[in-house]
Image (cartoon, rainbow, N blue to C red; front, side):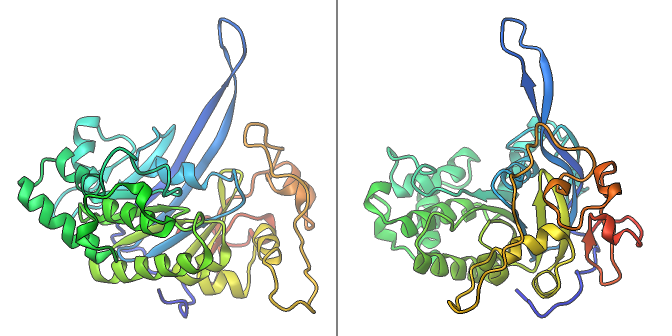
Amino acid sequence: MNTASTSPPIAENPLLSVKGLCKYFPVRSKGFLRKTVGMVRAADDISFDLQRGETLGLVGESGCGKTTTGRTILRALEPTSGAVLFSIPSAPTVDLATVPAARLKPLRTRMQMIFQDPFSSLNPRMTVGDIVAEPLVIHRMGTRAERVEKVKAMLAKVGLKPEHRPRYPHAFSGGQRQRIGIARALIMNPELVVCDEAVSALDVSVQAQVINLLQDLQHELGLTYIFIAHDLSVVKHICDRIAVMYAGRIVELATTRQLFDAPQHPYTQALLSAVPNPDPEQPMNMQLSGEVADPGNLPPGCAFQPRCTACMDICKSRVPPLVRQPDGRTVACHLHTSGSVNHV
């Protein structure tokens, strides 16, 4: 990661191009008919480009739609609308949002996910060797002997011992279990990896080890990450760019340095104000108050306007577009609507 960068990378032939991605969940009435009476807009008009070898962070409060966005991109959840254009070398670009299921399975080898909870994401009835080898078995890759050798090499790569293969998940610590999950995700040599709160369930010291491992593997294997997290200090360390989400929408997308040095959206500023100060003599100046917006019953206009200290009349009636700023970042706020609408 290069936190010294001050402008977003040039969007030329990105690995992933997300355009207007939406995922709505229907709210149904009680009773026999179960009519649809509303929609929960878990992800609403998500757009960004992701370059090869880049790490893009998705941050925001719980319930803002980070995990839903990541799973919808990988088609673990069926999108309501939008496009997810995935670039494949020497082949036409594929829209993951609409590609038929028969064509989707081979693409799974190119995109994987590391789950949040290393305790529940591993089958307790399977050995470590079987867990890591399962993707190879599903896609019928190699002989049994070849799969065993590949599993041994991958376990060593993530900091585990090949002789751990016969053991079961309960015999490992949380950090070791997450390494098993990482090995399972990388055994297919994917290009895109979605890390869904991959370190939030771990102790702080173990978090640092896993983050360093992810960075080393990225450089070694040429991986591209979407890193979903709520810990801003972790995101600052590992991400090249950061997308801040609120109520299912991206409200600011900028390089890591831009975001932490000079946040533009009031919600981004409020998030950063809530980061604990290590100096006990410096009082906290938390700017965030009120309740998180309900994605099933959003207020009119900007979803953040009931909690925003800079709210204007236009904020209560019109949803702000995502606007490119002179420094290259994009912000969805009526305080910054002088530029032209564009995506990063």
